[in-house]
Amino acid sequence: MLIFLALLYFCLACSLIWLACFPGGRASVLHFLGGLQRRFHTRAGGWRASGGSALRDAGPALRWRWRDARGWIRSHRPFVAVGLPLVLIPPLVALLLRRPDMLPGYEPSDTVVDAQVAALLKGEQLVPPASLPPVAFTTREVELVRPMLVDASRNWGLLHPDFSQRLLLAFRIMKEKYGYEMALLEGYRSPARQDLLAKMGSAVTNAKAFQSWHQYGLAADCAFWRDGKLVISEKDPWAMRGYQLYGEVAESLGLTWGGRWTMMDLGHTELRLRGVMRR
Image (tube, rainbow, N blue to C red; front, side, top):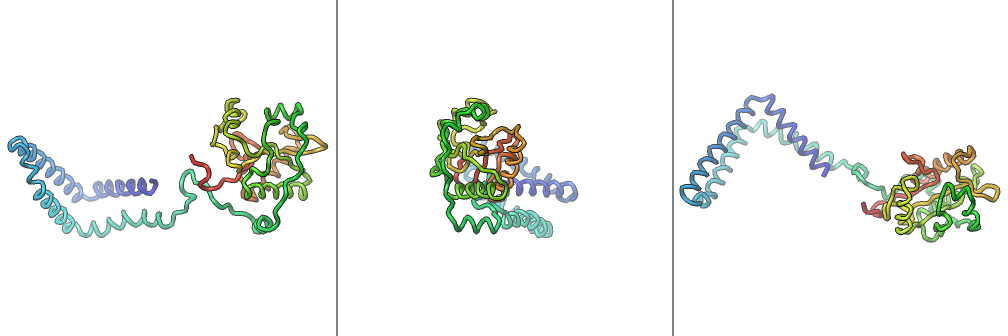
């Protein structure tokens, strides 16, 4: 569609330039329009006089128009020889050199990952950490920041394998390199739960059912585990530093980090795979 619009725009621009810069072009257009007007009046009169006999003459008229068009092309060969390539070559070049990610709404199927990270992902299969006690998700701090978290799914088996391995690798890097122990708050989210959260307002989520990567097992909300408690609050300087580091690590693994969004979701990461989410 974009290529068609670009071609249409280019043709219109060339036509306007031709009309503006070449008097012969303007004369040809006026002559052509005048001929159309005369033919219309003649045809209308024929229809009224013969009750449709002009339809029987349509074949000869079309052949006459074709001969007229060929004559015009012969008499304007230089213009056609120069103008036609100018019109056709740019869209053809754009078509040949286009990349899928130039199209709106495109979601890349393969993200570029650091070579060392790719080797790690290709080799060892990382194992999810032990589940946190349910009471960890019912504290006052957690309920204030993340309501209804106690009912969220933290089943690693419901996540897409590629995404879960990247996420587990992010957890490992955060712990071994920066000393932050990560915790999964919510992974897969059912469509019904997504709609329920959406009804709570934009402060919770703007996405309805099947508009979130959670429904495809390709998104997760995470926080930090410190001294036997979940630390989610953005007011904690230690946690804010951790979120920034977590975003850098996640992006190095080819994940999309919610901290870059207008409505920031610092603990959110997702893996956007092409052809999964239908919009």
